[in-house]
Length: 87
Image (tube, rainbow, N blue to C red; front, side, top):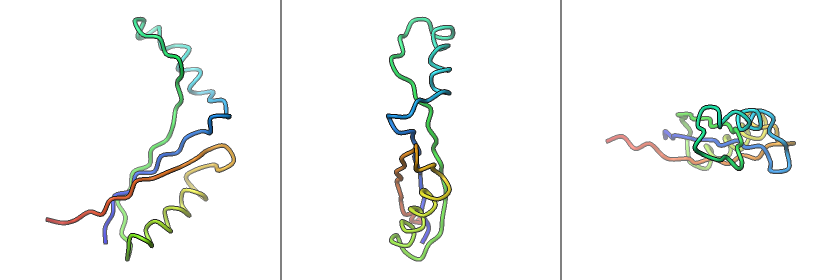
């Protein structure tokens, strides 16, 4: 079976986002007509994967997300998984 996986990795709310704060501090230099109240920079990981079943794909994505994609001390993750059906 083939799947499209999109993994979203975000800093926990309690963790300061230095990169996001730096970008937020300069937003009005580029776009002076808006007021940004909060800005966080996150990661999106997109993959096309093959697995014998959706259950196996989810099991492996859980491992990858916990051990490779996210620093689970300061980041949370979630993902969407869609089966690719050939037409």
